[in-house]
Image 1: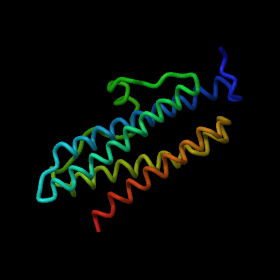
Image 2: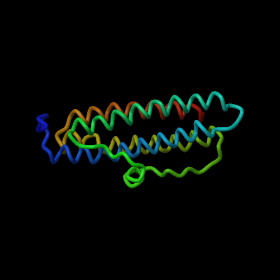
Image 3: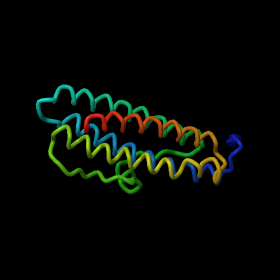
Length: 157
């Protein structure tokens, strides 16, 4: 059955492509956060282990929401790490040791990169591709990444 949500197929395809890039970013960020959770060392291990766990759980919810948004547009989310690595704006590599501060700095940089990307695309969704729903969805993700970034930055002061 045809998707009758009032957005042309061409515009839905553009939004789905853009959301797949975001999905790739979220997956890479999730894996890097799990890396921090698994590999953090130091006197603050227990606290930071739980801190990073909470963050990757938040990212897992975001990942599911992005994939479901793509499906709402009658398209399919990418689902392989090969494609994620091709699409992402982020690097899977990380410099630094396994201290909490090193992980925090790295993850903060990635969240800030995602925030900047979201700010760049938010208006395209509504204005260029006539998809106010996806624009609103992106606005909600922007707020979530801003809050996570705030939590990370709080450890650096």
